[in-house]
Image 1 (cartoon, rainbow, N blue to C red):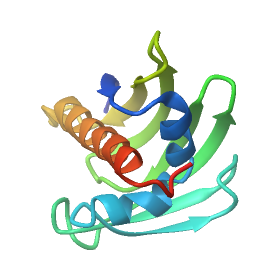
Image 2: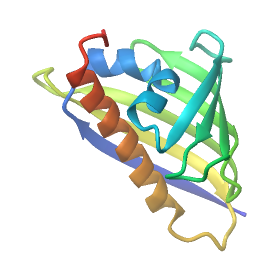
Image 3: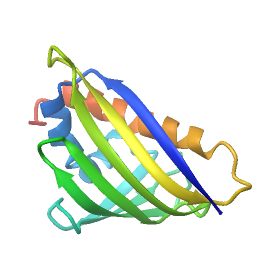
Image 4: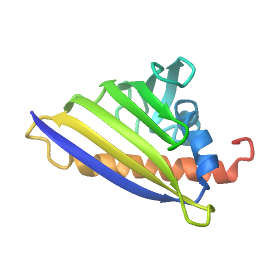
Length: 153
């Protein structure tokens, strides 16, 4: 097993306040936004530290696969969420990640900054690229959803 890192930055069309509000509800929103990727998500908790999210994957990933996460920290001031993946993709043993949203200078757009450390089998090549693709897809889709749905505050 090797300890690896993934660092992803994604420019988003939504302002940080709107994207942050949606990001705190990402477990509820992802099955609506990307139903082929996440068929459903069970959320146990209020969204704060200790909350468990169990994503049920759809056919775009691996139908039947469950990804279980625990939220470790939510920082309103820095617009960041730290979480630990407790189970999921069998290629890695553990993953701890932080997603942070940073406002642009004019406040009209934002950037999602994702950092993760994970333990992975040495034979798995290209996993970091898969993480980059998935985080980019999720964050851009979340931003588009926020911009196109007035119910997101």
